[in-house]
Amino acid sequence: MTRLRVDGIHVVIADSDPLARRVVRQALEGRSGFVIPGEASTGREAVELCLYYRPQVALMELSLPVLDGLAATRKILSAAPEVRVLIFSLHDGEETQLEHPDFSPRKFKLRPGLGC
View 1: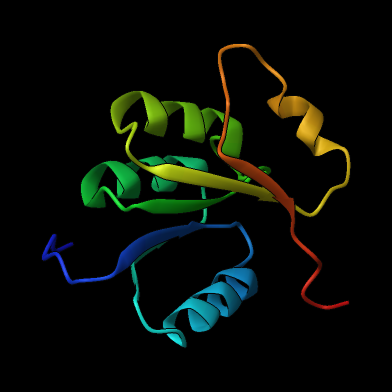
View 2: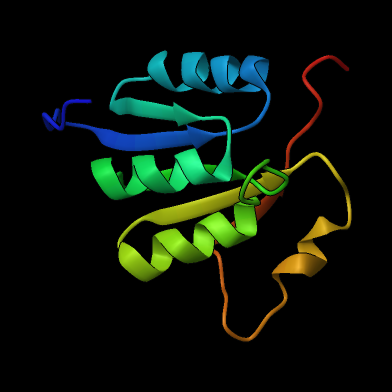
């Protein structure tokens, strides 16, 4: 892993679905100004990547394995509060997990299924 800083908005993608990560990467790389320094398939990987690369944005799936997206987001924000975490989910109703006085993510978004 190299930490060479290239101009643009740096985004770490954290999703357990490799197809979802590829689609998001392609969508962002197809636009000027976005750099994807890393992708994570688990919450633990997301934390490691965010603490190493210090991206401006982390796109975080709520239902990640090993360490869920909520716990990963807490760890990232406690160590790197400058990272903007956008949380998404395939499951309607999961936003209730985010209603906690000690935690306020920047955004919650339902992610449409890629195969539907």
